[in-house]
Length: 182
Length: 182
Image (tube, rainbow over all chains, first blue to last red; front, top):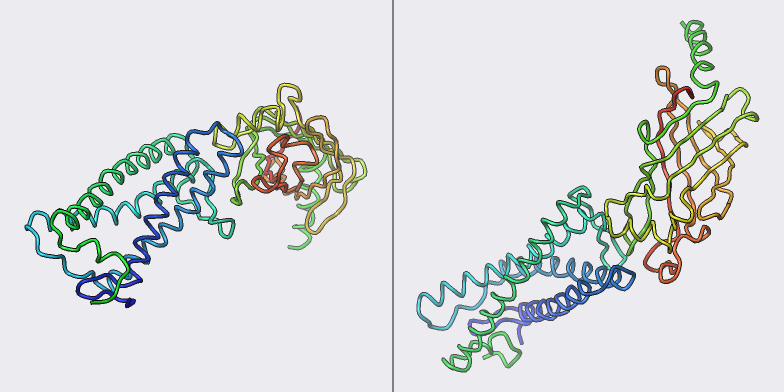
């Protein structure tokens, strides 16, 4: 499989970035939900710390993904009604925005809570806002709202991909899966 | 010119430094930095009293007495503050005050080093404090630092005794405007 995209299939770089981010998002949502359900204590601190490290990783990968997308534009979409094409494009860009907005609101929330984030103990992130519990609430509300938006948009994204693959039978899903380069 | 400066220094210095001087939270700050989940954060004590009776000409007769209200700890995170005031850290109901007393002073660089003893949770340990004294009008600005290991004072019991997620080292810094004790 080629590193770069072909007219009918994503290359392995774009595919790896896509699926690694999917896996990290699953881990991330799980860590966040589990940490949220724990009482204040060491276990919660550990979970939140990992949640922050994975969040920073996702932010870094989002930057790389955008850069790669610019360098290696995606293959053209299979034929479909105009409204579907617009909807798909809009949904993709919203998902990209979320890949930035979720980590950034989490980061700001950490700083406002005076619990700065560290990336796996290797580097501490700078704080762009001063500690402020009111501000923390605001970012927390935003962070949680954005997670729900992610659920809806990622759900639409998956549903649309499955519809193309199994109802329209246009092979759209295969574009994001390993295989022989046609 | 030099003579005049000398005369001025002689006039000002004893006036600025001799006799007991004191400060509290309204005229200074007492802060610390600690590490949580590999990230450094800062906190402060909001109620404390500092009394310094120190004449640089006769350091052997000097005396520094500090009392800090343990419950006044403020890390801009009410959940963390509650744990810090609680039985696993300061146990503020049982040990409401931390104290520092020094009667030995030595020249150290541009300032001084006090070799005193710090008591937290009823545990007394020697802790050196470095400080400088600078006259400022009728007051004296006392600025300094100290380093301690939280576990030596029993700060962090049970799950918090591990240093993997909460560092042992705590850096203390203060800046006080000392006025003549009234």
